[in-house]
Length: 88
Image 1 (cartoon, one colour):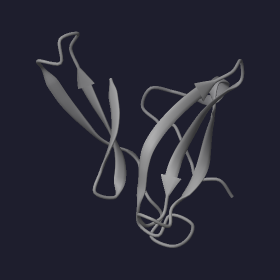
Image 2 (cartoon, one colour; image 1 turned 90 degrees about the horizontal axis):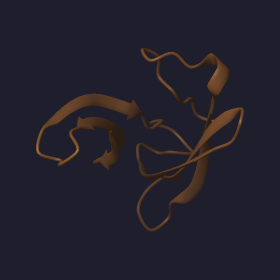
Image 3 (cartoon, one colour; image 1 turned 135 degrees about the horizontal axis):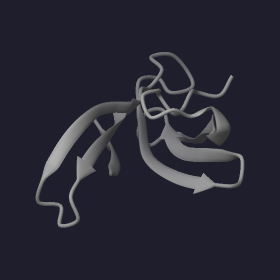
Protein backbone atom coordinates (compact mmCIF):
# COMPACT_ATOMS: atom_id res chain seq x y z
CA UNK A 1 0.00 0.00 0.00
CA UNK A 2 1.04 3.57 -0.64
CA UNK A 3 -0.38 6.36 1.50
CA UNK A 4 -0.10 9.77 -0.17
CA UNK A 5 -1.69 13.20 -0.29
CA UNK A 6 -3.36 14.75 -3.29
CA UNK A 7 -4.84 18.28 -3.32
CA UNK A 8 -6.38 18.33 0.17
CA UNK A 9 -6.79 14.81 1.58
CA UNK A 10 -4.65 11.72 2.23
CA UNK A 11 -5.36 8.70 0.01
CA UNK A 12 -4.56 4.97 0.03
CA UNK A 13 -3.52 3.04 -3.07
CA UNK A 14 -2.87 -0.69 -3.30
CA UNK A 15 0.22 -1.51 -5.39
CA UNK A 16 2.06 -4.64 -6.45
CA UNK A 17 5.72 -5.31 -5.60
CA UNK A 18 6.90 -3.54 -8.76
CA UNK A 19 4.52 -0.55 -8.60
CA UNK A 20 3.25 -1.70 -12.01
CA UNK A 21 -0.35 -2.39 -10.99
CA UNK A 22 -2.21 0.10 -8.87
CA UNK A 23 -5.67 0.07 -7.33
CA UNK A 24 -6.83 3.39 -5.85
CA UNK A 25 -8.73 2.71 -2.62
CA UNK A 26 -9.95 6.24 -1.95
CA UNK A 27 -9.66 8.73 0.87
CA UNK A 28 -7.69 7.40 3.84
CA UNK A 29 -7.84 10.58 5.95
CA UNK A 30 -10.04 13.56 5.12
CA UNK A 31 -9.06 17.12 5.98
CA UNK A 32 -11.35 19.10 8.23
CA UNK A 33 -12.74 22.12 6.38
CA UNK A 34 -12.33 24.25 9.50
CA UNK A 35 -9.27 24.76 11.75
CA UNK A 36 -6.88 23.20 12.43
CA UNK A 37 -6.75 21.57 8.95
CA UNK A 38 -8.42 24.40 7.02
CA UNK A 39 -9.10 22.01 4.15
CA UNK A 40 -5.59 20.56 3.72
CA UNK A 41 -3.63 17.61 5.15
CA UNK A 42 -0.39 16.26 3.67
CA UNK A 43 2.88 14.37 4.21
CA UNK A 44 1.74 11.44 6.38
CA UNK A 45 4.35 9.66 8.51
CA UNK A 46 3.50 6.58 10.62
CA UNK A 47 4.85 5.29 13.94
CA UNK A 48 3.53 2.30 15.91
CA UNK A 49 3.90 0.99 19.42
CA UNK A 50 2.22 -2.00 21.07
CA UNK A 51 -1.12 -0.21 21.44
CA UNK A 52 -1.52 2.46 18.76
CA UNK A 53 -0.61 3.65 15.29
CA UNK A 54 0.28 7.34 15.16
CA UNK A 55 0.05 9.34 11.95
CA UNK A 56 1.92 12.63 12.01
CA UNK A 57 0.98 14.96 9.17
CA UNK A 58 0.93 18.56 7.94
CA UNK A 59 -2.27 20.35 8.84
CA UNK A 60 -3.33 23.61 7.22
CA UNK A 61 -2.43 25.85 4.31
CA UNK A 62 1.01 25.70 2.70
CA UNK A 63 3.66 27.91 4.28
CA UNK A 64 1.59 28.18 7.46
CA UNK A 65 0.91 24.51 8.22
CA UNK A 66 1.44 22.84 11.58
CA UNK A 67 2.40 19.29 12.51
CA UNK A 68 -0.62 17.34 13.73
CA UNK A 69 -1.19 13.80 14.97
CA UNK A 70 -4.00 11.27 14.56
CA UNK A 71 -4.13 8.08 16.63
CA UNK A 72 -5.66 4.66 15.91
CA UNK A 73 -6.07 2.02 18.63
CA UNK A 74 -4.68 -1.29 17.29
CA UNK A 75 -7.15 -3.38 19.31
CA UNK A 76 -10.15 -1.61 17.79
CA UNK A 77 -9.11 -1.61 14.12
CA UNK A 78 -10.99 -3.59 11.51
CA UNK A 79 -10.04 -3.75 7.81
CA UNK A 80 -13.23 -2.01 6.65
CA UNK A 81 -13.13 0.93 9.03
CA UNK A 82 -11.47 4.30 8.70
CA UNK A 83 -8.25 4.00 10.67
CA UNK A 84 -7.72 7.51 11.92
CA UNK A 85 -9.80 10.22 13.46
CA UNK A 86 -8.65 13.78 14.05
CA UNK A 87 -7.53 14.75 17.52
CA UNK A 88 -10.18 16.37 19.76
